[in-house]
Length: 397
Image (tube, rainbow, N blue to C red):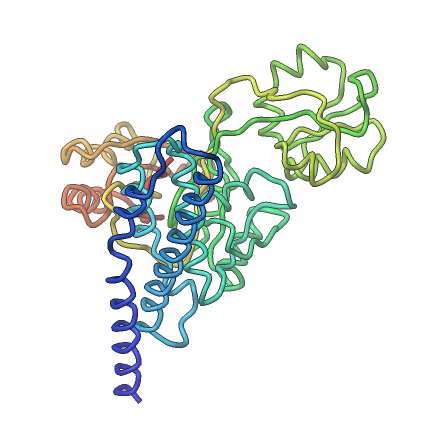
């Protein structure tokens, strides 16, 4: 059986290499067939069609190579077995490095993400749980990180996302962790106290909020429903424009949009996509208080991955007595000694006893990097609680 499988893999590789050899000159050919400015529209369109045909051929060629990855590992493997976030991050960084325009970096990254997503889904689509319902920013983060060729599973709460990934119903989950305006999403942090899941990646998403509802003017608004984070991110605007209107926190911005659709006098705050999904009027555009309002999301899965070359590591640590003088200094000192940069620290109640805390720490680098490994070994020797939550590629864009 093994000999037959090896023969099948060898033949597939030979066919693919032969095909690849015939298309090696494709990039040069694309340059040579470019039509000078001033040529007729018909001629320009013919050249575009020829370029499209070459792109199509190369896309299928890439997909065949992606198939070989699966064949060479296991004929019965699942998409999650082949997904490598460190490799995808490397591909995206290379694409941005060689980008000369006129397409923007964001567009190049999105196109390559979709190509990788489609190639991986040849086996079967990844199943990714997110904070639903349809139309949330978390869903947008799923699409930005994984592309469109995944099966997105909307769930009602963050703890449900963790449970579905832990149980194998979902391959990965995407959860919000912090906002540049309002800070940490504590519910997500607290889930790591009891969960065995690992952080496999991060997504940074520029967040713009829109006021929406069935009404046509502000005068008809009796209440505004949105996630508490969104209400906080738009606090100044609401104070100025709708000071007398009730603010109601709900489980997600999409839930706020749903209530705006179904309830008389209710408006919602959400992304523009929610207005389209729930057929609502956009009453005000980009009402967030800060123009650089950005939310960071974490991708959670069941295992750690290798280094990508530009990584971040997240730790959960504590000491036996966090109220002792110098307790936090003792934990952090090894990072400074080994010149490991700490980018974020948060404290949360440990749930062991009152006024006792654990610390969530983000550092630059991967656990396999020698300076990081040495610093963590020293830190672990001083900690009563030491847990590596993840070592993963930093957000590319």
